[in-house]
Image (cartoon, rainbow over all chains, first blue to last red; front, side, top):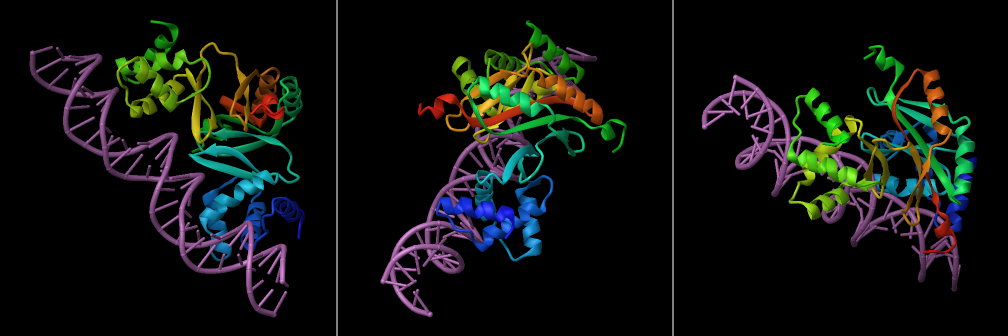
Length: 145
Length: 145
DNA sequence: CAAAATTTGATAATGATTCTCAATAAAAAT
DNA sequence: ATTTTTATTGAGAATCATTATCAAATTTTG
């Protein structure tokens, strides 16, 4: 069992929840995605690889992964929530091209520190943060489709 | 007619759209809100003050205001989009308390500059950006329901 | 004022997400 | 290992924010 699975199992145990076969499947599928995905994409991926897992179960499981600190709901795009796993991932922010829908990730650089200081000032305990820039990417501006 | 209305009118004219009574009502209601609001709140406010404006029209008008550069869709909270006007507003970011739902605004300080530099590096033209911190506010942590 | 073009309101439709509940699987107890 | 308890699953119904439709009403133009 890999690290993420252990983290998840511990998390579940603490709440007297069970690490089931289905949850394991979802966990694996999530970590197979190294960029953003939405529920439907995940559903299709799982369906293709394995027997069926119901959409409902995915919707139920993702929040658990978020609470376990393994997953992050990182942006909303085309009326869907998008997720990305965050296990040993660099923090990053997103440029979202509103023309082609492409998402560019960038290291968050000095921003994180600034945010931490601000939060401290307001005595606010940050669980997670999200930075999204919307605009037009270079490719789209130079006529590229 | 105040500044915002002029901006809006020019915007509409450019697209051969009309600055109707209803659109004016919505514009005014939007600018009466000096913090975040969702569509339903706006709908209630307008309804209380004036005769009815249909929800559909509000949903149709807000994107126009966004495109006109007067309004920003700033965060999603409780499955609803939240807006805030941005006319002569300081840029700011948001701390969103996930326990009480409260939204704290903070000046974006040095972050803006960093972001601009990053965008330049990637040759990405930012139209707007959004920074949301999720966590627990001081009040909630000290037991204050 | 009449004609052309856009807008509106009411309501139906859509689509992502959540809920329900009977059937199933996992863990605990025996 | 079998039973008992408790949590989980899948399928589909239900919700609810947002969009689309369309005939009636407004606005602008000629």
